[in-house]
Length: 203
Image (cartoon, rainbow, N blue to C red):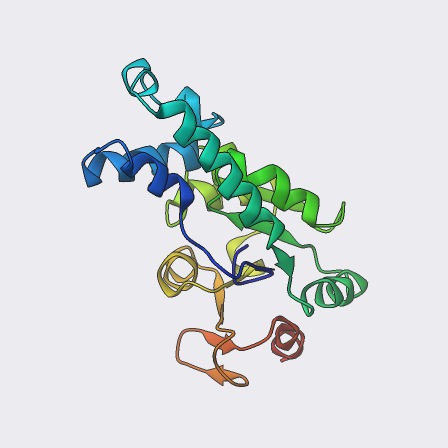
């Protein structure tokens, strides 16, 4: 989602920052963030009663909610996103969103996107797995009935999108909005705008 079709001016991981306020070890903070991404739970559901009873928890939690709200207010769709989706649908392509997304982030993001934009969705908190875990891709295949060689993966991350797609037998397209034009590499294609995907699919 982020940097593919949703633009966010400042992208700190507010939940990681929140967990770190309680002097937890980095490995514990990382685990909590991961749990939030792969479970259908809210933030208080994954925190122990001991942490929630610590002095200052309520004020820090309120601060987190305010910061998250401000972050959502700054979100916008890239201008090439909806026109590209419209053309794909006119050409009878099915579209899907596949993202490492926590439940608290899902509602504002999905409300930003017009209804019925995607034919399928595989979100990590719903599936119980996140990229590059093969399970999230298997979920997409199971709900869409498409084979690996019938799917094109477009994403901004070389590891969790491009490498993951290659390992799953999917054609990867790397969207790097800081680059220029279309570049063809041995195992993937790089584009700088989402609408350049249309030209890739033509060939």
